[in-house]
Image 1 (cartoon, one colour):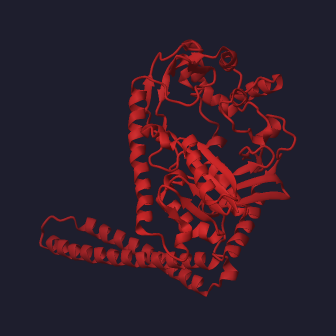
Image 2: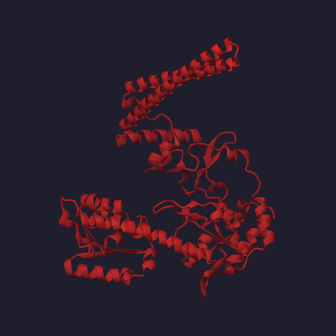
Image 3: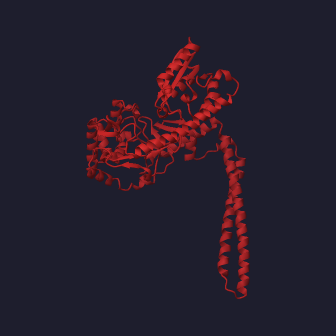
Length: 498
């Protein structure tokens, strides 16, 4: 069988500085083990250098899992559990469910674990306890690393993998920036053109026509970043230009801590500006203050009304199948989606137009079919029934509370009437108004309860194949089932399911 050895090293390990965790040492340990126990088998090597073990978003481990899915790997060997994963729950799923189902043997040398010893049984408590400890260790380490990195930033030192376009790391001090003149020429020209009144779309067209290399291409050629461009072509995009034009780094200021991860495996989010760490005059500026302020003044203009009111359910979710960009939603006249790659970047294969109503109907139908295939229609219908029944119970409680309020107000009104009849000064008219308002509220609640009870009766009569339990395309529905939507033409709309 094919033996897969997997190695991983991350920045977390730099914090501990354990030589045994290096890729070289892991490779030696794993190959020695294979030679001793599996001398006749073929070795396949997978590695991730500089990736955290808290998630599976790693190229090496993804290639390894693809090999497992394709039946190309019969055994996986790692130095210890933490090299494969530090997530207690995810690791447990692979050890106890996925790998046994796929018929893959898993060996962790330092943990003295071999899945072949646990066929038909659950792993010993010490194995599960170790996995939990790795997970807790990762969380604790994350807190320590964040604190140490923030302390470095507060000292006015730059902490980043890649400086802004136009700068390079100082060879003598990696926490400082020096101007990369070959890139700075483009930055100065872009700021000058925008300050003179040109839009980012116009600048992008000119740069693309002239063959000016965008940051992604420059970094790719220098080996700083290896990601391939969307659509296979490096081009300037006006959204990227906007981010550059707002970047204070070009006037010599260093702004850090703009985004953060609240917890492990969470998405990065923009933080409160008050928490940003700003170091003024950190490095030599590329743009003078006057030009930068002139550019920022243009960003103060309000958006057009149609930009603020665009609320269609598919906005931001539809990608062009040709170039991969998010398609725009036009609401002037007919409502439709279109790709900016066609008109702005002149890519012939991009989608020119597709009506939003037609697209919504196509996706709605596909989701209905998908739900039926998953066998989740009955679950959705049952959930809808339970929600409707809960709504009725809630309205019953509100009606009962309203009736009690009416009773108390009526007693109060009677007392005030008696006082009024005896000549005492009491606001009798006000108490009448109060009772009337409470009665109207009670009548409204009774009407709502009647409608809710009708809905429950209607749902109870429904059959799954008649209702699908889905009648409208909503954001909740899209979040639940749809990973992404790719549009190539009206006849070719592809949905990637979660």
